[in-house]
Length: 233
Image (cartoon, rainbow, N blue to C red; front, side, top):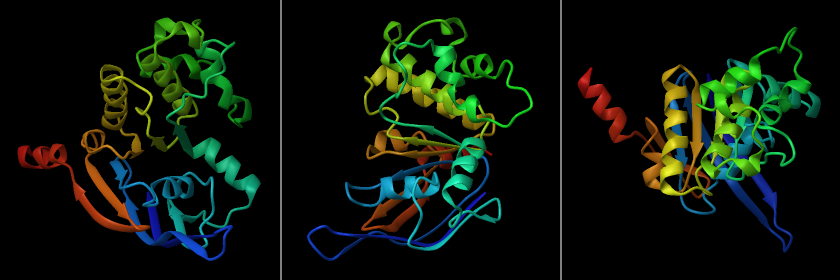
């Protein structure tokens, strides 16, 4: 599904010199995988997430998505591709305070070119276990419920890829487990999930962990959960 070939991202430092945030990352992600991207601060996690989400373009290298080279798309084409193919979940929920859960979820549909969007918002809320919270505003929901609304919003256009950047960072342990269980269930239903986290315990919910260090892939291996599944099979 995703093929990164020698992706580099270079920034010019304001004080002079350059910073290689990504220094030749090559990575393949198959459809239906649940992959965690981890590493220390400054390792390139956020930069890689931005490249995967077409929020930033690489300085060099190729990004193939379903065999299409998307690394050099123009701004308008990137926006259209993101809306159709990629759902985003961030550490901050980014919900509109004065609108209901359903209205928040339906926001991406404003830019959709679908012939019909009827029922998609309610279906997305059902998928995250919030079918009974459609008319609640964010202030009437717990942190975990707000993040699940944000996941539903990422799902509403039925994208091929969900990118989750530190999605449990603002949650207590119980709410974090609920959100991760939602992501795991979505993956079991066939969604491709890429999760960025600095926490090894969160990364362990994935089936594969890619660890970055210095803008390079330092390790790429299955988690204990994935290994247990392979042994069971």
